Figure 1 (cartoon, rainbow, N blue to C red):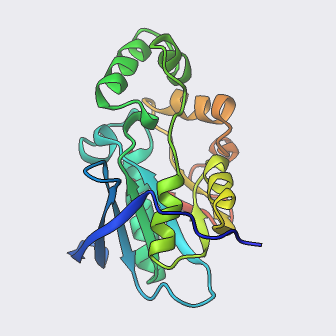
Figure 2 (figure 1 turned 120 degrees about the vertical axis):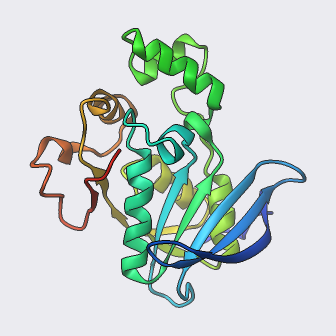
Figure 3 (figure 1 turned 45 degrees about the vertical axis):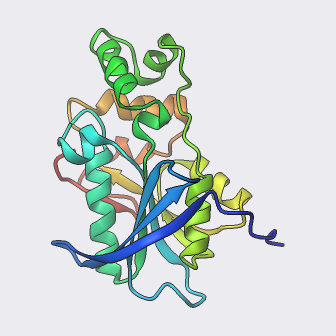
Length: 222
């Protein structure tokens, strides 16, 4: 039984058209609390009905999303998700302001410096006195509820997202793997995500030109 919808931690404040090279989305701005963090949702098509909606929950990564960094897979995942939603003709991308797995931009750069010195992404955060991953997906569930999404096909390699949504009454009918082709700068990062953070990235050991069945794949820049 789905529990009563909790008081949303974010509220929809404004919406507009957003034409892109893939499709013309609707862009929705959400505010966390009063004067708190601002989060975004891009939607395409009719989200009503019983068919599960294709969804990507994407945490902000300035270096990967906007500066084209090859140290992570974030920018390529963002692009692949938008392409997949456009191809589907229906879906949602949530863009959450949780830079650096929730540690913030400056701490992320400090963690990168430690990684330059040999630490992996988990140990770098711990050496800064920070958790390996402090992201919260409560606002994602609230945003989906306000958009009318109750069942979804989630593009993710991270089982924590599925668990967080299920705890808040959002049904994940299917996990759609979202994989990218590793490069020399992020291969170790991806391996750490799989071995130490539980991300489902076993397909990285297979032929990079052959994504697993049902996967959304990208061979683009990051």
